[in-house]
Every structure is written in structure tokens, then in C-alpha cells.
Image (cartoon, rainbow over all chains, first blue to last red; front, side, top):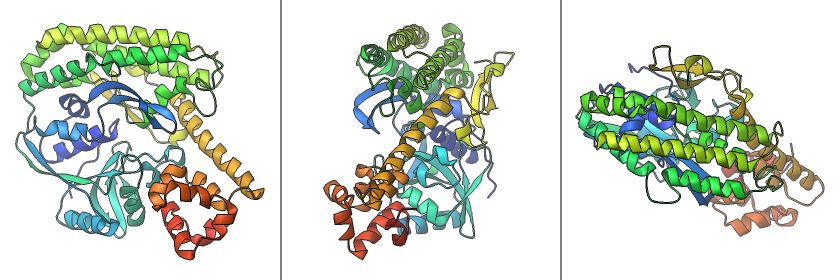
Length: 326
Length: 131
């Protein structure tokens, strides 16, 4: 198959933009993220992963793929399976047919991942573009080069159990009717992102950041939940982002590709500022991480203050953006 | 982030791989570049791994002391917990917890051991012993 692997920063946006490009619809990873309005912030204390509250910087798995269906007038087929054998048979049949297939997998069972990155995380997306003997040829978007995976390991990864169990999920496009992104859908996507980030719900968007800051402030430095072997919340904000495939803000990329109306909005709202804002969030994470390692004194109050400042800046940014696309 | 501010500190948990990152070039355009890794990321990832390694180490001690069955060690060695092992093996959680006790583990039938072996991706002979 004539397929071109391209590394991406995150798995789902990388997989879907590769699929789109392969089928003749030019799309960058940033555009996939922006157009599906997948950027968000959510603090979900009632969902625990390894005992830690879930902090997410993006919409739930599959939101990026599903969010692109309408703007690209695309139809995708999603299939899940009752048994690993049935899943593998269908995958082999599609590959023999020359199809490029997206899969949801568990990172833990993929042998080509570095050992320290192998956690039981079930929503990793990758593309299969061929089979060579017993090895599947895989384009994993977070790797520099295409990789290979023996069929037994891939079957395990596809049929792993637990939270977000993939059940062998595979997907491929049946039709992509629009090959170019139009300005109207870009503006619509921006409006939706703005709505999420400014939602009047205390655990979502800018308000979610403030709720998290309030919770962080209450932790005492000595509290084992702030720092300790089992519940390091200071660094947790960072780790989760990393593990859940959190996404930086690529609105600029979205706007640059999105036609006149969108360019106007970009000029009005200084989208470059958004990048700087999210970088500050990254620095906050770095500070939390260093505190956990004991390289700096643990200070939940200072971290909370920084997070609040971040929320402030994001709010003003998204308000400007709202006015620009109104 | 500017292109020259992209972290290249080296992240041991990446095992020599590079990550793709977005940054701004001198003209202010957003471009992609690769990063060798970031200290903060290494800290949080290795911290998570340390917790898992520590759990497995403690379990090993418990097995040696006769307080737990080898299943407890292998469960943590595979980075699982009771909830995940229960979902993967199909045994209810209370049964998994029982099987972590040496007495109940010893009474498992070959078919039940095979289910655990399948869930953990290990041959049954390995499952009965410590490494």
C-alpha cells in the first residue's frame, strides 16, 4: 500500500489526520483537533484512575474522529467484535482488500513501546497498513517511524479489558465527500470550543480550572495526597495530561487553514496568545513535578494561585475569541 | 513556545525515542519539531512506574513470607490491580482477592489457573512460582 507515515503529537488526532490525508483530504493534526472542537478542560473527581481524580484536557476518546464526520461530510464504519479470532479475521480481510484501518488498543500489550511507557491505558489509537508474515505493519502516530507488531500481541492489545475496553474496535472511512475544509465549519467549531471552555458548569472549562485550584489550595504540604508515594496530586495534573493524551492548543493552525472568515477571527483574537497560555500551564506542571521529587518545597497554595492566573488568562482569551466569531 | 525553547533535556522513559511537538519559528509560524524529552515528564512517568515497581516488590516479600500467593506478585508485576485482573480473567473481585491467599491459590483447578495465565499473558508453570 502506498501509505506515508507521519509522526504526530497525539494518537487520535494523528490517526484521523493520517486517514484523511491518505484518502485525499489534506488535513493537519492541528486542524483535526480544532475542527472536532476536541480541546477542553475537565476536572472529574468522581472518576478515579489508579486512585487519582481524572483531569482531562480534551474531549473523551473517539470525539475527534466523530467530530470530523460532519464537517468533512464523511461516513466511517466502526466495528467491534465478540472474540479476538473474529477481530483478526476481519482485520486481515480488510488489509487484503487494501484498506487502511484504525484500531483502538491498550498501550500495555504493544511490545514496541518503551517498557516505562507501558501502562494499562486502553484508548491508544494506531493505524494498520499491512501484514508481513505474522507481523502487522503499523503506523503508530506517536513514533517517528512505522513499527511492526506480532499478531498475538496486537490481538491482546485490541481485546484488553478494563476501563474504556476497546473490544477490538476498528474503523475506516466509507466515504469522505468533502476534500477541503470550509470556513463555515471552522467558525462553527471555534464557537463550540468557546462554548465548552466558558461553560457555566463548575467542573468544565475555565470554571473547572478554578475548581481544581480550590481543591489544590486545600491540600496541606504534609498531606500524603499532595505528595507521596501513592497520591501525588501536585504532579498528577501533569501526569494525567500526558497519559490521557492531552492536547495543546492548536487553534492557530486551525484558523490559518480555515478561510477568510476564520483568518479575520484569528487577527481579532490574537490566537498566538493561546499558545503562550497553554505553555504556562505546562510550566505549572513542571513545577508540580519538581515538588514531588523533593527538588523544591511543596507549596499547593502557590500552584493553585498559578492555576487561577491561568484560568483568568484563558477566560479573557476565549471571551475575545467569542466576540470575534460572533 | 519558541523553537529554541522546545525541551531537549532527555527523558529516560522515552527510551531514546523522540516526541513531536509544536513550536513557533522566527517568523511566528507554528511548525513541528522533535523533542528528546522533558524533565517534568520524566519525573511524573518514572514516579508512576516506581509506584508499580514498589507494589510488585512488596508483593514478592509477602509471597516469600507465605502471606500471599504468587498470583499477587504476578498481578502487580503485570501492572494490574484486583479490579483489572478481575475484568481480564472474568473472576469476580472477591474471588480474585481469595486467590491472592496461598491457601485458596493452592486449591485452584488447572482450568482456573489457565484463566489467570491467559489474563496475565503467562504460562501456568510461571504463575505458580516467583521468578
